[in-house]
Image 1 (cartoon, rainbow, N blue to C red):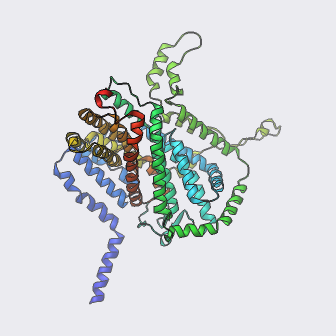
Image 2: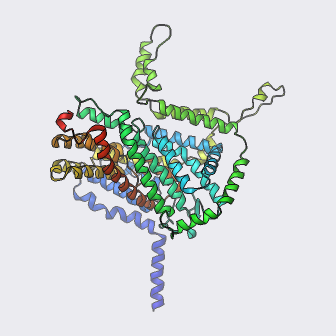
Image 3: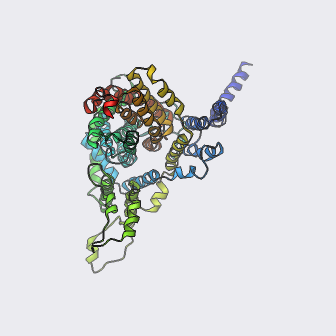
Length: 579
């Protein structure tokens, strides 16, 4: 009898294990129905869709790109956004830039330039993994200061990939992906469901390095006024709320204030991720012991990497061409519209014909559209060059008498793009854009923000600062940083006006906190990139992101009052003196 009961229970447990995705996919919308039925408001309907998508992302009961397509069905049927607006969210200017950046990364891989850079970096740091992690974080921070965050992490991904594949081939301790049975100190990763083999899981070292680079690129973007669109939104909203006050937050002052905050944040999160994933200060952990064993074989590993690097030989024309396109892209991205000088995009507004007369209609046309020139414009130019420039070129054959016709492929071919382009990643980022648009249309978070505005006088001044930073960090995970800035910054200015505080005391911390999207793949394109390529489970990213969000918010609350007082006198000047 007991055996029969045990068999029945075992069979049911086995059935649940085999079909848990189906149960989760079916039951989760039913469990969340009370949110939808409580008031029937547009904001609650949008919140229902967002929580449903987060549940699917965390459980990974559906493939991540399929979950990202849910807004195309639920937003129109719930009357949140019309069906002709939702598809536009999946093909935005940012997505075009993202797609071109991915193609540039494919060209780097196709030319094998990523192997040369990855192996060279490993040799430069003498295979010290903690230093390797730190150098990559510093590089991601520096690059993201001058260009879009997603472009920075996409360009760095091939280098990370090549470095870890090389380590896995030469080391018995450090791996890139490992079989599920050999995984240690990880969550249940059996649900990895994208392109790689379901039995493969990322190693702790790979997760740590990829997450550190993603978070560093996110934080680094806030330190330079020209790097992130959210910084420009700050200037626009400040000018709108206080039109008679000249904006004292210049590019130099913004960098002097936010660069120390960014560096302290990155150093803190790097230290935490080292503790969490690589056993820093935890000598008895499996990760620390694994690194200790790796130290013993480091000489052999470095010799193998050095031999592999020598086998690459001299730079090929293919690598030189891709490197040239990469440098050109960085140049165009950086000098498109820097704040400290006139960018190349503004030259189109001053276009003149050298015969002492202007073609006025053409000049008006260029002037009318010059403000629309974004990073995606030059990105498409770079992609076109990748297909146009040949991957092989021999000057000697041009002057040779016995020249024979030879067809050469470009630096990047469409066959490579079709085979290796992660189209699902573009859909995932588009789903995040759809959530942003839905949240903005439905007014997600407006109730909480307005309650804070109406009851701010019940809290101490520092508590109000902590509350707006907390709201910015939480809402940006669900609604996107642009929508959060558009919602929170005017409210922060209103609170400062009613309380007669210095407006920048709340407005700058809210801007910084609204950029801290660390928890979900769709919260920021940088998260989506590392999650997709490294196959980091969403639950792993969520747990790491929560801790990093707390660290980043704490740095703002501890550092900004000091630096803000030095830069802008936020404690000495009141609202009347400011205006």
